[in-house]
Image (cartoon, rainbow, N blue to C red; front, side, top):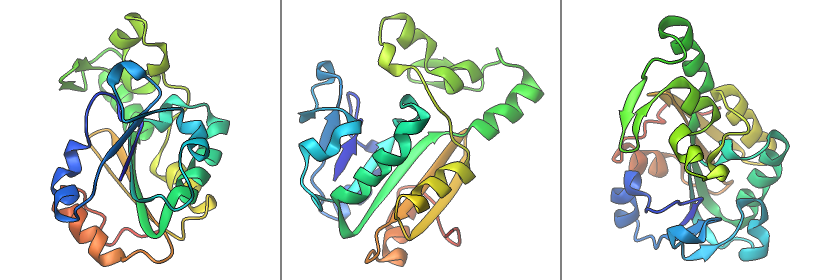
Length: 201
């Protein structure tokens, strides 16, 4: 499993599925200070990995750090490095939910608390303010996603089946390769708290 843009940690949210499926996690990140297994840019996966190298891609809150025009070629590379029966699980802030929160609560209100501290709409739209202030400029957000946009981009990138869910200011997309076992994958993810039942696009 490729943890694309891993940051300092493993894919803890799907730890159960990783264990049950006997997956080996490879952490990939642009920042050498987080000690990934492989240092590199998500924009250039093809220079680091051969085609069909992975069964699973996990990409949690990474794509929003790219520019809008970089998303499609990145998703094409996801498609390229996955096995024919593999899948990608992608998460990003849900800008539609953030917009609703701003209208109801204001842009400076705390939406929720995370291990990094209180999270406000500005953090979800533009990147975590404290991290950027501390010099981690790569943490800035350069684009955003709604369920519709992320789902359509994945379909355009060649994934034949895409399911999208939204909860807790987050849009989650499951993109299946042509030979993937839809039911088995969704059942495995359900055990990790991701519900994509009846959500295929």
